[in-house]
Length: 443
Image (cartoon, rainbow, N blue to C red; front, side):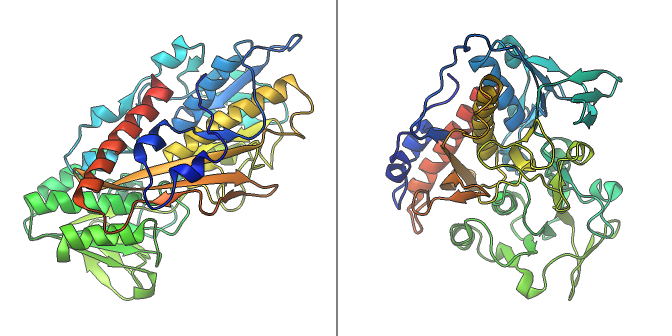
């Protein structure tokens, strides 16, 4: 089996002020309360065609899981790229602490596991006649469609910030070429220069990601450009793991990092990319390097498929991840409106495994849609604050009829005021977390 069972009450034992990270690494992605599922196909089940769009942590996990527990069904994964570049740990690449190649994974093991991997771009979805249109004109029919399109960086949301501007002021929020561009710009920045990091309003992929990035950029500057300044221009007044990040900034970087929030008038409202100017309601700020993270929405195919609403994201039935807008379609990962669950790689992986079970049950039992599995999902997220120190947060979530809700007291943060040894241990756990997650998905 490709998942573990989190025993009832285990989340509480894992959490609290002294959250044990070794046990978290071995903990389940989700808990099945009072139910079990056998991977053996029920007698008389008609083989179905399941199509999965998107080969990231959500899509690849879902395709692999269905192929493992229900090999009687044909599972096709549509993904245009032959190499997946992971976003978790990519901030280490920006700071010169990790090679981009360590972030890259292929799909060979998924094919070997029985997934029909199709490297093509999906152009459209006909949800009435149930087929996906590929870029070569091929129509791929489905009985169930699982969409994991990830995010689209909105290049129409911030005046002055378009595709050309992103080539000058990178967002680096989709790992790959933009990651390397930002790393090169930091390396070429003049001594004593200013780096600005513009953060959008939520929701966006990886809520603590901008602040981990700020920490690691500061670590790079401290070593290579110690008189430089890092300015965070935030569209919010509060952010994920804020007390932990701010404590780390004071401790390690002093006055090098300056954070300004929405109440300070720091939200960037316009960009002059050629001049490297960021305009807020009160300031016109000229910098040497600008990392502009624009607003985001579900990947473009979600809108063409009719599963995204006016918010740009995809409403779902919480327990099953079934689209609320289209029949026989499920949406998982960053594109889905999963309420309290963050848009993170670990959450996407957890959602994908549960969705796979729900889809397989639905294909074998006409009553399963009315009686979905009772499940709780776990998310854990590590953030580096320097090369060898990290902080973390864990949460446990349950579905209600309308939303995913966090279970109070079932998660926890790294302890505040922890000694360096604890932060270094968390950095080691983070490496194990990433290795475990990527091996479980990509082999």
